[in-house]
Length: 220
Image 1: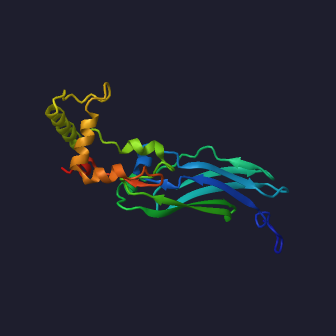
Image 2: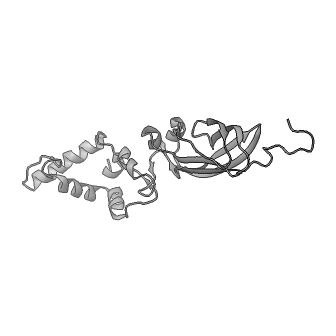
């Protein structure tokens, strides 16, 4: 312990945090093991002395993810340490119950000897359970909102078959092989759903898009 009026090494410690976390998070992220924490490094800016027994803590507000901590035995002068274990556990129940987007934060602190040496906060947009983050943020999660087994999809296929029969064409919907029936599905949706008109006429969203249940765009 330092003597009175003596400066502790921690008093002059200079730690910099480098972090990158997803800007948008939704329930699909929790279901798909989406990479949330893309980068986390700490740098000892002091080239003269190292620091022992550090702890990095990551917390969120509101608590949409489980708190996580990492322990570092020592960081040498001028050293940069990269955290490789960056898996975070999202609270699926919290995200599933979000009906509107809310603003959240992720806070990272570096502590040693009971003192906070560095702190960094990053904003995170918590999307509603049925909201996709857009092509700029999570293009790979668009498929998570596909609902091919919804009963409304069967109704679309059934009614599209009627359109084909009425036109004197085979009513088989085998789009994955010959493409037959896709035009009939399109015509049916355009003629029976204002939601589909709105979706089809709008530009593909780059930032965020609220998805709709198939019942909404079939009008049934």
